[in-house]
Image (cartoon, rainbow, N blue to C red; front, side):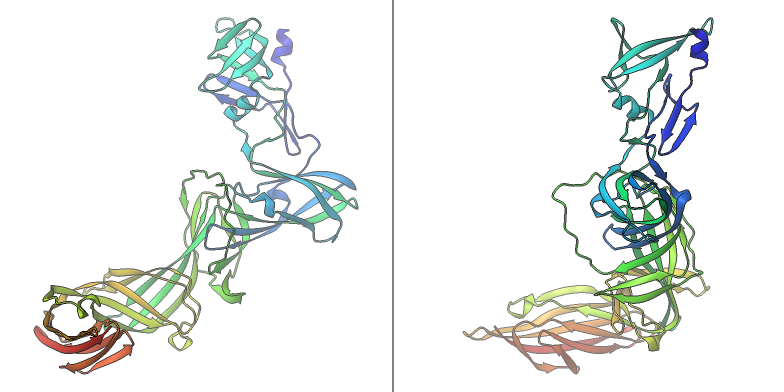
Length: 491
């Protein structure tokens, strides 16, 4: 009996391999596993010929995984390992690319309950196992049959007529349950019209893969041009790695049907940050009403990894800085008096996304951060803003912050109701102050409601549209300029 226990054979077959002498230890126990999935044809990354990933904006990606597999004629049970743990199995499509039309899928199962000592124990609740205990004095081993009664917060077993907890020994299992895998696996039952080596392509949608665009701009000393770099930040929490993958990104809002039941959501931390790779800029093309960006080389996207790749780079892009005071429309039909003291000017930078400006590529939405060198030549952060998807030939507007030295005092100097037909006249005084050592030009924007006209003004303004009038006002260094105007508004 002792000799039989000392030479206890066991095998573990997950997919196609039989592995001997595997012991999973936990607490004061270990687990010995015999066999499972013996009839499957197993495919893993070693059979992979290529992989391509298209990542969309809203936690969605399309994976196209090509593998070489040898199939029998007739019924085959093909286990595709190393698929995404967040695969949407209802979207999976399997086909043979070298023997077109030879495969038909009968059934498929996605096994995502992963093999761990605890999971294996839970699967054997109500089933019989072998418990092997070692005498601490003699080293002799004794084996007994036991039934697992519970695996919650410890192990409870029935051995003969007694109930035991806290087993000090090894638990030997007969096999691995069919739906318990060491990694996410898509098991497909399919029929093949011929026995052959097939190049199969598995396509599926998955969560756990996302991307976003980030931009860095350096504003020159004269504040009239920027150097712009764009980066794509990839995030992989899908549960598997993608090696030598062809990478494509789709910018745009792709509609998805929302599930009525929430899918399982794993709390996964990103453990690594890959270095940015700027050696292969992205090519851009239109795709339906979206834009597709393709990386010029393959890349590795490891599980639990954040990675950056270069999107674009452009130098000496003409830019314009603006100091802007924005008004409100509520005070044109009310008597208001003082409208604000030491109002700060907003600091804006804008540039045109044009080929003539060394750009012209549709820009995916993201955060654009701006730096400027100080007098010592050190780059200093001066603000950031979020941009939306920006087509070619459109203007990018950025608000970087609020000015320290350029302020305004604003008041309503006159107000009266002209008639009972909702006609109002009001006058305004804006004292614009500049504490800088050089003159500045500011833009005053007033959103005026309803049917309106300017009756008088100290500086010539411009009607931008039916609800906006602006004035460009120059303020001398360490001085102030006063803008006055009067309006008539009919509601």
